[in-house]
Amino acid sequence: MKVGQTTKALAVLAVLSILGAAASAAEPPGKPGPVARGAYLVQIMACNDCHTPWKMGKEGPEPDMTRMLSGHPQSLSMPPPPRLPEGPWGIVVGLSMTAWSGPWGVSFTRNLTPDPETGIGRWTEQTFVDTLRNGKKLGKGRPLLPPMPWQMYRNLGDDDLKAIFAYLKSIPAVKNQVPEPLAPEDLLTKAR
Amino acid sequence: MRGSTSLGIAASLVRGAGGGVAALALSLLPGPGRGAAAADPPLHLADTGLYTDIARHTVDPRNLHYSPQYPLWSDGARKSRWIFLPAGKAIDASNPDAWDFPVGTKVWKEFSFGRRVETRFLEKKRDGWTLATYLWNDDETDAIRAPDEGIRNHAEIAPGKRHDIPGVNDCRSCHEGGQVLGIGALQLSRDRDPGAPHAEPVTPDMVDLTTLIERGLLASYPPDWADHPPRIAATSPIERSALGYLHANCGSCHDRSTSLVSIGMLLRQSVAPGAPPDPVGRTAVLQRSGFQLPGDAAGPAYRIDPGNPARSTVAFRMSTRSPMRQMPPLGTKVVDEKGVELILRWIGESRSDVQVTLHEKEKP
Image (cartoon, rainbow over all chains, first blue to last red; front, side, top):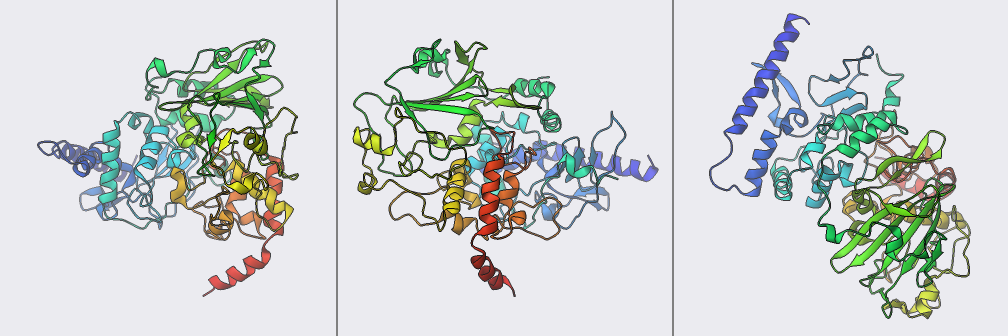
């Protein structure tokens, strides 16, 4: 690893730690309303780590909060992922933290803002709950893909899931059409 | 293994059929369980009331044998179906598209792949429907309830392909809100479609819409059903069959009554008097798809693009069993070649006049 890459990696870790510390202090006193509770949960569950695209700031990589939770940028066309040697390394992540390549193919993190066309603006609360409980797109479609840890999040209580949805519906809508994931067979000829 | 992450799912996606390790990982994943044991269906199929003698497969004559005219594709399984209605009770068809079944109704569907593999069971209780499925033993003399999580890769259905026993959440995914699929006015209409793929022979012991009416087992139905059983309005026989296929195989989810209404694609036919006609034409034909065809540089495609089946996402997703793209997303691992052929032919042959007109309108 080159020195520059090491610096970037350390900067990423540092920012992640700062976000975590900020989230720990973010819980307001008393019982929060659903939106505030949802904001708190979204912070501590690290949703921004993958669903907000990262950019290079003055202090190193940082989440681009002007595009908060809007998923993999439509404008960021990813080249085919590098072909890795046979194990044990297996996953490659784009610098935006929104594109992940692994044995499942390539996944692009979804737009969680309330944009009706490209985000969750038309979802019902039940759609959101079913998505995380069942681990399926819109609650009943294709499987959710790594690295989305829905197997852990499915154990959230109903009130917490609904609070997260209430918060996501309250944030600024960002129009951003995230590409479909790529299947392993798509990569057979494309991987570099 | 209990700490398996979504990478466990990744393994199942990569391995596909025969992924025993992935199946184990899935079965061990934590998740909300079912409620109290008191609400559980019986442990043995024999105790659900389907048979008078399960070892001889003698069905209780109170259970009514039926066959929907447009069968759901289940990887070529041979299926048998029965419904039990409590004595003196009738199905309420006040909502012609969503029949209300009396408390005590039971429905069974048996799946065979060369031998009996599973029998699925629905029962209407006072607080809603319970769902379960039962696994047959090798000599087909007994069947016991499957685990709530289901069982992946349970029985071979084709070389390299094995049948999944659905979990309770899978069941609820299709039977959302207690829909009883396959029992409705269109599916049980005596005016059966001779072009329906995989249509099963009707035997004398089967009930249909007309016999339900004659026996007083249906109440509050539209009066004209007695003389004119519902039939899909279509411009050609192939269109009738194609719309019927989409109704049965896609319409249980892609309907205004389910959570997928937000997608705005309605593939289920309505039999309600005065309902807006042609839901497929209004919501799928020449409607932009949110799904992107893989490797397609031509930009957004239509859900159904008349005259252009290769750029119709409905046809594409029916034609693949890639887990992240296939439709339906569960319950099948083998493409229905006959069903796909029907849909491709219908898209390729029909409504090209509409296509030209609307494409012209879209040009700047």
